[in-house]
Amino acid sequence: MLKGKTIYVRPLEVTDAEENLGLQSENRDFFEQFSMIRADDYYTVEGQRKRITEYQERLEKDEEYHFGIFTASDDRLIGTVSLFQIIRGALQTAFIGYFLDKAHNGKGIMTEAVRLVVDYAFHELKLHRIEAGVMPRNLGSMRVLEKAGFHKEGIARKNVKINGVWEDHQVLAILNPDDEQ
Image (cartoon, rainbow, N blue to C red; front, side):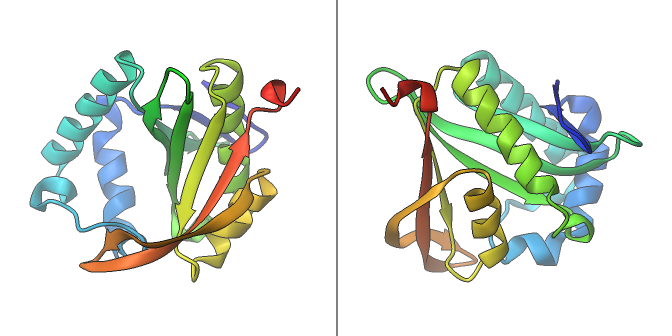
């Protein structure tokens, strides 16, 4: 568990499936503005259990890390933050992605969660670089990353298919400060 001031993050567990389904369902319209088309079973408890089980298997293989974001005050799941497409060897890199309950946007919670996971990625996983892609119109997400220390690197044109449309993404990245010598 990674503890912050107002939240903590920990790997998602199968017992989180119902709460994660609630989070995803309540925020479906909001999240789908920025995400790829979901499989039919995504919005079912069984689909969430299956997905979390797959996440746990990938964590064991050091391929992906999917964390739930929980409120410190009442242990409610309010979002997720993930490290994925981890490449070891000479690159030591990963992508980061996240979702936060719309009701909690603009409060610094996601910045806190991203900082916790980046710190974990650099100091525990020994990654060198973490990259994110954000649709240029998603200004809130760009602010999160910049406040967490990420820097803009350029635009990846027509990079990710979101709701059936190839979307440009602003590429942002952060480097492990321990590697900058």
